[in-house]
Image (cartoon, rainbow, N blue to C red; front, top):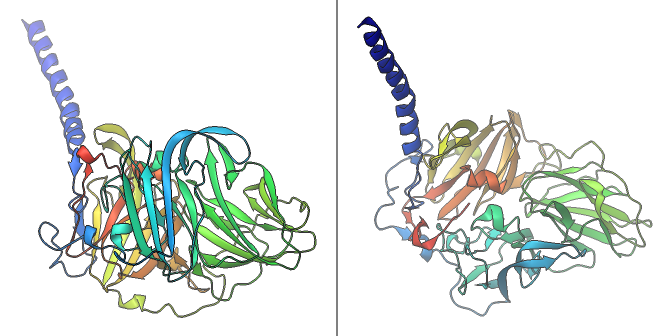
Amino acid sequence: MPDVKKRRWGRLVALGITLAVLVPLGYLWATSLVPGEYDPAEMGYADYGGGPSSGHEHHHGGTSVADLTGPKTGTPDVDVTLVARKQRFQLASGETVDGYTLNGASPGPLIRARVGDLVQVTLVNESVEDGATLHWHGIDVPNAEDGVAGVTQDAVPVGGKHVYRFKAEQAGTYWYHSHQVSSDEVKGGLFGSIVIAPPSPGEVVAAIHTYDGKRTINGRTGTANIDLKPGTTARVRVINTDNAILRVGLTGTPYKVVAVDGRDVHGPAAVTAAFPLAAGARVDLEAVVPAGGMRLVAGTSALSLGIGPGDPAKGELPAETVDLLTYGTAAPIGFDPAAADRNFEYRIGRRPGFLDGVPGLWWTINGHKFPDVPMFMVAEGDVVRMKISNTSGQAHPMHLHGHHAVVLSRNGVAATGSPWWVDTLEVGNKETYEIAFVADNPGLWMDHCHNLPHASEGLMTHLMYEGVTTPYRVGGDSHNEPE
């Protein structure tokens, strides 16, 4: 009998240990599940940043994002139709890849507008099975035109179309891309460039993208050349459409950084250093073409674009980098960050657990995993101050839709150069940035990592204006997947 009791007791102990392990795991699994369909305005929990919470209900009434449109009437100055296809296609340099195209090519067509133009773009989905949208990265469009599936519109299904209309308000270098299953569709080629500025003789647009492991400039691997006469002032508009930071710059002559993320730099000085271009970000480099020409280098001289007569000599970028915290000269920013109405923290971390029932190592925001993340609540006209810190072990290019923010400090060191305006900010591991902006564009706005697989792994939330609702849903019959 004693042996029977011992065995019985042993089984009870084993059962207790098993339950002690499985019950918490089951709870963590169950609480990680994301609803098959949900309202993005109702996810997570409200963070008011120390401001008033009254009037921030999103359940009933209010303003729908569907009503926050661009001009509904008027003849467009720029009228473009883009046909999205999933297909096998040929890069400009001859290699064949499987992916996505717009009007039969990737990158898609360059869209050009002037400040004040009414832009109309019709997206037609011919064969992208998961649906598609167009997000105007860096252009602070009205919310309904932002192109985020499940947030500002439904993804355009095969055989469908969607019309975007907005005024080109701010000169600069931008790009457009799908915001439906972005980690796949952007990687596969569903993107293009948009420049708001009149064409100039020395303009060069250089979109950097990697297809199936092949890094390209304007869809071309290796080296190429653009013939510009010596003495021409060249403005090289560089766009990083990949998921990681990239060192870019001009070799063969000093150059100036004249704009970042579509905003002019005040008092730029000539440099020979490399520029650290975050994923999703843009930089405009300016130089006078020397007699021997110059070269845009993206990473290494193995991927470069000669600019000038003949074939300019190849050269590697120096180890030194441009630091926008001190580059250029100070200028007014138009508001007082010290008088902020909202003060937010955006702490990026990582921890093991479940996300939608899948075990893994997941990104966190303020210690919370998606979808239980903070939703940053503002009212129109608020001055917003945000501290972004990163202890996750990896760098993150953080992208806020619909707004440009000014960088106030990095790791406690105040910015002293030109006002550093960004829509996409590289936040390295163990770095902390303070940024500020005015909440002047009502809507429901994505705020996420532009290393797009990171967004699909939970590193995304929203900036939400009081009284704004959305009729759209993520998941469900619409099959919207906005990452």
